[in-house]
Length: 183
Ligand code: ATP
Ligand code: MG
Image (tube, rainbow, N blue to C red; front, side):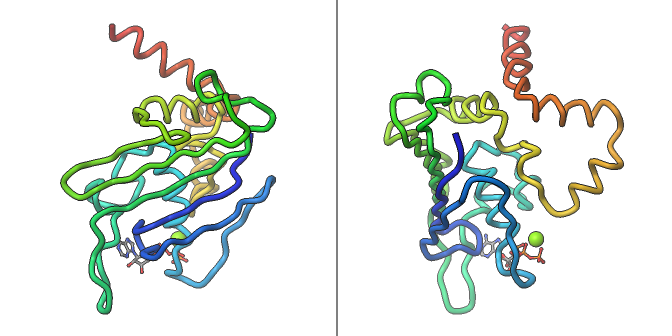
């Protein structure tokens, strides 16, 4: 399973619909300061279920919506669509009925977030679990943001262990155990 396309609309600086293809393997994002590199990475985390405003460099969840510029009015919603190639059929049960997996997240002002997987309404938790089991996801070490290499080098052993567990694809199990213990 791997990412193939990302489409952004009204998300931070991506006011007009922008679509990018993602090739298998390592992808680097380069460009001048302020062109939207970090915003693009945040869009990828966000569509996978990121819900911490701090991870999105904003005060509230609605701060991801295009806030307007001198020549353009603000938008009322932000939407990110992520397409994955599932021809190896490695998606978890419930998501595994087609070769292409498409996840859409949309946030509307004063309404909140809604998710769809392959056109059907989904819960945030379903999307988060899908990616936790696929050992990627919003907190994934596969997405390396600015400054993260230095953080990894300076991390305390316990924090470093979490990163390795995430990479090994067992963090979904921890989340389920935690939820089971709360019941
Ligand atoms: P650097 O090389 O400095 O790290 P970058 O390419 O990572 O830059 P980003 O941080 O992704 O750039 O983009 C910053 C731009 O996004 C700024 O111009 C900022 O005003 C704009 N921006 C962020 N959030 C919004 C929003 N909600 N609405 C409109 N513009 C936004
Ligand atoms: Mg940046």
